[in-house]
Image (cartoon, rainbow, N blue to C red):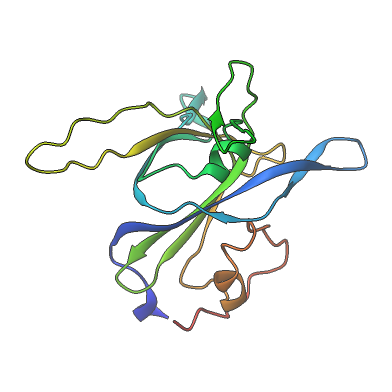
Length: 204
């Protein structure tokens, strides 16, 4: 087990997204875990930088910290990619692909929410993540004339990841994640198990 623990992480690859099509509800009519659409690859990942929203607050009593309030409001940050795919533009950013194959953007477009899955490399095994409820803002449009050397212009999505109604924000694999869960990570957003954790580990 110990020899499978990472000492460092680096790199970004295998970025996938899955649109939230509808929400599950409990017996009281409250939203629960969402129903996701097909998981789709977002190629050309360059970088991902997300910061935590919300800080812990101390409640003081009896001349000391009596209780710590956890204010986990999710994450915000940027995902930089080579080019946004047409599928992501239409299904998530709400752009319209007309009969002539032209992407059309309107001012009354509604943005869709989605899960974002991605992978960081490590020295022993790759760490896979999922953020369950994300939204993305429209990227800037820019390029430049070609000079003596060609500079590739990327596109940047500003992301906001918020908690699900159940409080769930994010999950990631560890050295003790089972083979089944690890190998199926990008097929559909992982739904946390309420069962007692097992000792089965990933073999590769």
